[in-house]
Image (cartoon, rainbow, N blue to C red; front, side, top):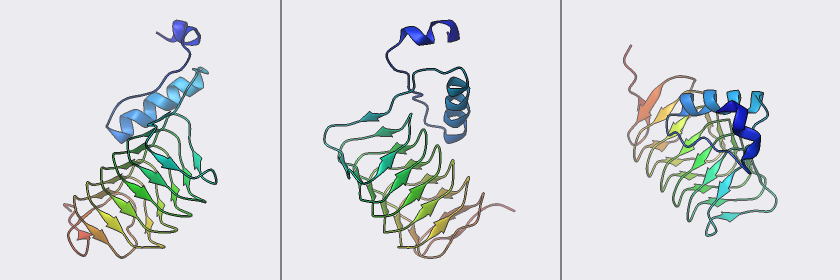
Length: 156
């Protein structure tokens, strides 16, 4: 497959698992594959934001001014990333999830369907935020949070 990569106009990694998607994307970038991003025509992307290569932005997603989206991110249907947010590589923002202004999300983190994140919150790398959670406090690396308000539910 690698031998034919340059014959393609563009390549994207369409794998839902954040870790696997990130690993495959880095391998493809290492062999200089022509990585592209896919942005649905109904997505609303501020001209003052940046979307990393290999990202997919689904229908109805909104990315506001000053936001920076990392490589290989998934911004799913009707999610909202407000002003000045910073999302790491291979993040998945699920359908209907809402990030208020200046939220930071570490690489390979998954924000569940309909979750809401208060402004200025810092969410670490490798985090899972459960469906419908309300994140009102910073979240350290590698844990799972759920509920309203979101609390650590990781197994110890």
